[in-house]
Image 1 (cartoon, rainbow, N blue to C red):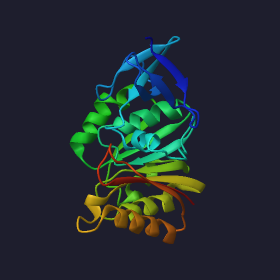
Image 2: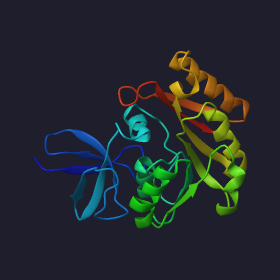
Image 3: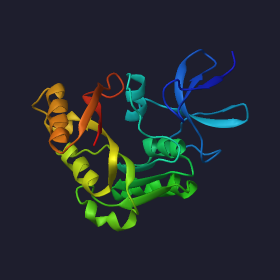
Image 4: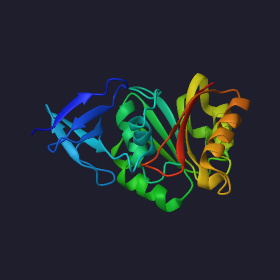
Length: 231
């Protein structure tokens, strides 16, 4: 059986791959042809190279497979990514926004940022890495010109929604979107995950967001959920 690739029926710049054994995976068109970021498989179809997107390594891919209704990122989007780590999900977002778009990557851990720079950003013209703490958006505000279309937040800190909203105050355009990957264990280990998700959604509502959906990420990520909201 041959590999088949078709556009995702719902989301621009995301593809569905059917592998030789019949299994289905998500994929993005590889902006840095010939290069992988985290050992993902590269596949070619009709002269185009795609990167198979591992939902066990990326909360965005997990959320899409769990039925997320909105992915507010497409060709040409400007995205602020908080908690970029070594670049697994940011690299797929880089594929999605293409050379017309841009991904601004904020990461606090210097080792992760070094991996991000050396393995990912060095080969992608549409990514800018910052070694900064997402709790202090004023420290990197100088480096981001204009407003962004979407802020994606994946940080292991207690006040995840507050940090996201603080960044939105500075960087998000009017009617822009946010995506919050909630790690309930980083916020409160004594509460049930569902309670934590509701608490973070309440924070966003208080800060002027219309919370659109909350999608739990099991079995891909335990005690995690993806919240999408628009301001």
